Length: 75
Image (cartoon, rainbow, N blue to C red; front, top):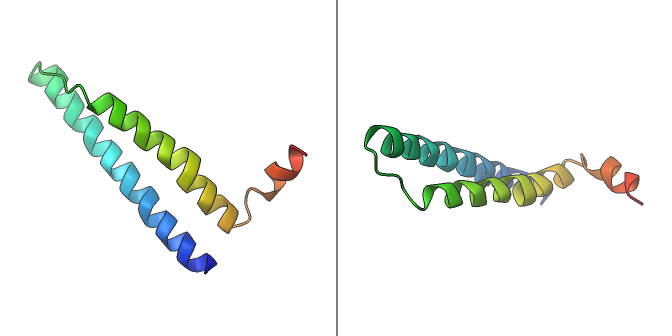
């Protein structure tokens, strides 16, 4: 079960980082080369970053018991 969660979170994390990189590259091209900025690109990048940092990384860290020291630090 833990191994399955680790694999799924790794795939989701990689996908989120890849999509975020593509969106940022498209935003740079459309804003500075075509002079037509995308109104949704900045928000999508923000939400993907929050998703990967908050949820997916937390799931991945707890499945590898990496966050146990931080949890004990706050109690």
